[in-house]
Image (spheres, helix red, strand yellow):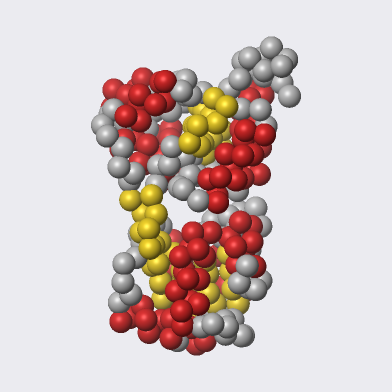
Length: 264
């Protein structure tokens, strides 16, 4: 119980290790929840650059637009950029999918254009600078795999698109049954998922019987697309945040608490 005699709600944060996970855990704890952390994604730098990737980096000043898909794309991508360009080239439009990514780019003295609250490929595509890109070179810095909507639409608009995959994702090495045991022991009330891939890995690490057992747990998700995925997986208690930022996810968590009867 907290000081007002209310039950302390237990929250599972699932972001990968790093500053983003630390910041969200701290914000959730400061809001009065008991926080547990279990990453549902592990990230690592790609082992070696291919000749094509090296050429992309050498030709960085030939691009009109460079897009970072995530804060992790900045973390891993700028490490590569700095190896080739101690000072980043001028005359390029730089973009970030959201505010956290833009803040990371500021550490490299790069002022990025962001899509505001719509932190997604669709939000980036709505930016006026990316509407008329026929014949222009665009570089997307990202992790391996992921959605292809941004590249596909930019190609449709006539852009010359390259991708630089600078890190890879994998499912954490969690023994069978271990995640279900932790969720049960921690008495988790709500799981915060920052991406569709995190949801997919949650389902992968839980057996069908375990997934059924935990259907009553609420989920906080970053978009309606991920909410649809969760509903299809059988979850009924879902709160959709405006985006995956700490502020939006925390606001959605507070909305969940209000829905379940707790007051501030």
